[in-house]
Each structure stands twice: as C-alpha cells, then as structure tokens.
Image (cartoon, rainbow, N blue to C red):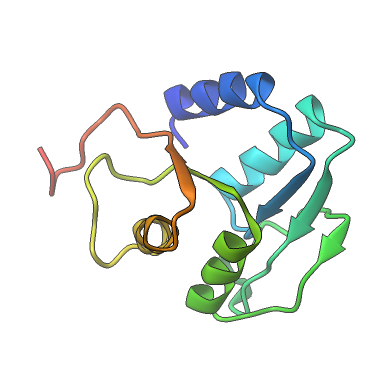
Amino acid sequence: MEQRQFENLSDFLQEINVLEFHYGDCVGADEDAVALIRVFHPEATVVMHPPKDGSRRAYTQADVVRPERDYLERNHNIVDACELLLAAPHTRDEVLRSGTWATIRYARKVGRDVQLFLPQKRTKEHP
C-alpha cells in the first residue's frame, strides 16, 4: 500500500468496531491490515484464508487458519465470511485481470459493503 492508503486504512479502523477480521495473508495490504487490526482491535478474532500458492504469502499469525485454496476460491470465501470488504487495490481504476478488483466486483455482486482505499497515483496504464 502507498503511505496514503495505509494512513486512510489506519484512520478507518480506529473508527469502527471489529469483532472478526478475515484476510488472505499476502504480502503488502493483507500484511499491513492484520498488523493494524492487532493494534486497534486486539480482541478481534483474526481469521486467515491462505492461498495454495505460497509465493506471495506473508506468513502472519492468525487465531484461526482456514484451508489453503486457489486465489479465486479463497477470495470468494473471504467475501462470503464478511459484512464489509476493505480493499486497497494497486490501481485507482478498475482492472479486469486483477485479483483485488475481481474480489471487489464479487463483493458488490453479492451485496457486501465495500470500503476502498485507493492509491493517490495513477498507473501508466491509467493516466
């Protein structure tokens, strides 16, 4: 995440009540988000949904670890388990071949609330 995304997520997490937090255990935004949850909501149950492909895993600590799944199934399981999806995509504009954006689309399709933390900069593909 960019610094602005991190700060916005941090501010947001301080304003809400979190009883349970589901995440995918990938390096970057997942890793940062679970660290913030531990600081602001130490009583929350942290539930990891790890991917089968460990190449981008952060290997963080969780209270509950679900079985490893392929990314698409894992992302759907996270959405299905939550009421609110927090998402910090790499791009400001929606990208078709992006796991994060696909998860956001799925969450919207099934009627979940989505809170986006967008980067400040636009990518070269999206000036």
